[in-house]
Length: 350
Ligand SMILES: *[C@@H]1O[C@H](CO)[C@@H](O)[C@H](O)[C@H]1NC(C)=O
Ligand SMILES: *[C@@H]1O[C@H](CO)[C@@H](O)[C@H](O)[C@H]1NC(C)=O
Ligand SMILES: *[C@@H]1O[C@H](CO)[C@@H](O)[C@H](O)[C@H]1NC(C)=O
Ligand SMILES: *[C@@H]1O[C@H](CO)[C@@H](O)[C@H](O)[C@H]1NC(C)=O
Image (cartoon, rainbow, N blue to C red; front, side, top):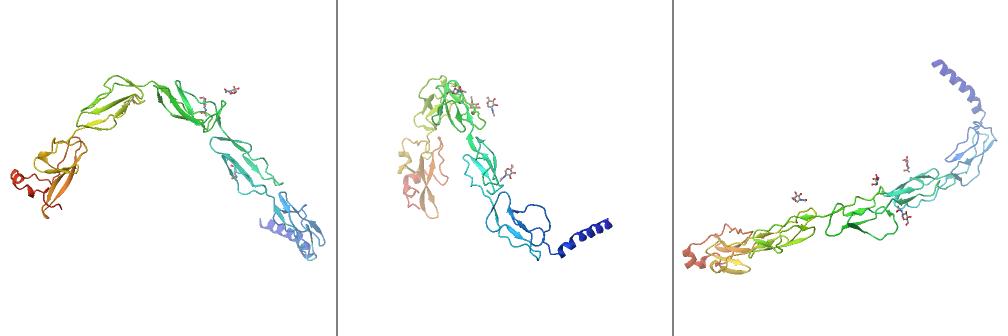
């Protein structure tokens, strides 16, 4: 190994040593975009060569000729080669483009958004003549045929259209002819694969005979089956309050919508004392009839024993239940009769 390497070095010395000593020029230095024809490695003083610009570069200023001087250096060249540029690309409607530069050999990649197909080249290159290799592509929408329409139904289009093709994104709302119920997608549209979305079905739906409610009645007291969207109204017996919708509807599931409930009134469960109801004070014995409605609020009076003052505490009737606040103390019959002025409802309020 070592002897052959030594031999190689020796040969190289033999070749090059005489050249440098005679002050000849080496291959001229080339800067960006420049080129020189031929493969000559050494030049004699007085030799001149013409530099030029590579493909895709435009010569700008200065002389192209350089001379090998007696000192073994090349004369200065003023030639500059600048890269050719292509025109700045226009934005692609319904698509995107990807590029880093627009000079010679740059490329632009084009892609279309969902629902659009590329017409033309997906990749263009800036050529050495400063032109793009292909005209810019277009993104055209995917097309579908006419929408599928369910039997006994129709589609209300988002906007008018003519012909027998539709474009991606176009759609509408399905409707079924009464009394049929729409089961499935209410909206349909031309999708990316060129097919319409799955259409719904129009079905005949019945709900079983509606049932009554406790402490109330049905305004249409016909206990028969009802069709889709048919309604039944409810009311409550006197003193009862309807909680929920007045009307129920036969849903497309074949079930009725949620029924209301009749909420019971409350009796104020104290025998001696005064209450505040609707902004007015009543002795309980005068509160006739002793009945308040569901969600009504009354106030009873409690005693602050430390400060010797009275204060009102509220309580609400919830479906027949009225909780008397714990601080309320029912006075004895004697106190109530003879010392009622000392009751918390009668003394100074806290
Ligand atoms: C264009 O796409 C090719 C292939 O997918 C990729 O190699 C190249 O980097 C892309 N060019 C640009 C400018 O994004
Ligand atoms: C679409 O309509 C044109 C005329 O309006 C007709 O010639 C063509 O056959 C129709 N195509 C389909 C798929 O219905
Ligand atoms: C579009 O619909 C046709 C007919 O129903 C079906 O054969 C085809 O597979 C669908 N295409 C796609 C991409 O789903
Ligand atoms: C009616 O409602 C019940 C309970 O919510 C449900 O289990 C049932 O499937 C519904 N009936 C129909 C026909 O959808």
